[in-house]
Every structure is written in structure tokens, then in C-alpha cells.
Image 1 (cartoon, rainbow, N blue to C red):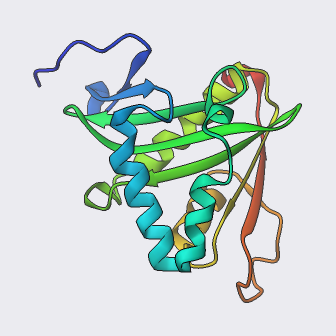
Image 2 (cartoon, rainbow, N blue to C red):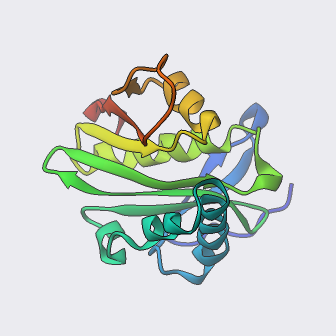
Length: 176
């Protein structure tokens, strides 16, 4: 497969049979490449939770997602941003993961797992030892992803959904 050179601040993730397939870029959340995914995420929140969900997209100042306390990651395939996610400082030991999303045309390919792994690796490298995140009760696929990737539910998984679902996961510095 022909590929363009990987931009500075990027790294490649392996695809099938070790073939480099994805380009992971650490960018400011305000980078124009992030706009389509963030807009679509906001629209999805609006569809699932109503107009008040838009507040979630603007609740935190964008600088909270900047290094060294935060990060914003986009996963590119053939030059197109297909998935992404971010974290911000929650407390001295904890990174709060936010904005994890995959474009609908690219779902069911394990891309959210790749984004999670990159966010975890980056957070551990920056000294965080715990991740905290929430997802909503109308996103059962996200609940399943977090449970399948080692996150501990901080709620009764058998109870009917009524509020955001919090999760946590300990990070190993060895993973950095």
C-alpha cells in the first residue's frame, strides 16, 4: 500500500499482518482536522440526548486537552480522520477520557480500541495511574467496549440506565 510520509507528532499503528495502516496524530483539539469528527460527535449527542447534550461539548475549556495535562488524538486512514479521542487532567493521578468517537462509516473495525490504547499509552507516559470516563445510557456499545477492555464499572451494570455510566481503569507505567 502506498502511503504518504507520517507527519511530525505522529506514529503508525499496525494493521493486519503488521502492515502499517493507521496514522495516529497528537494534535490540538482546535486543529481543523478535528472539526468534522467533533461536529459529528456533537450531532450524535444531540440525537441521543437532546439539545442540552451540546453543553457536554463545550463544558471544558479547550486548553484542558493540551499537553502536558491533556491530549487529543486522531486516527487517520489514507489521510482521512476516522476516529479520535481526548483526555484532560481529572486529578493528580487521573486522566479523564472524553470525546472518544469513530465515524459511522468506520465502526465495527476495532478503531475505538486503537484510540483507547493510544490514549492509555499516552496518559501512562505522562504519569497518570488511573483513567476515569463516563458514557451515557443510550450508548450501550460504549459500555460494552469499556467492559471488554478492562474498565471497571462504577455503577450497577444490571440496573436500568438512568444517568451517565462512570468507569475507571488503573494504568501501568510499564505500558508507556
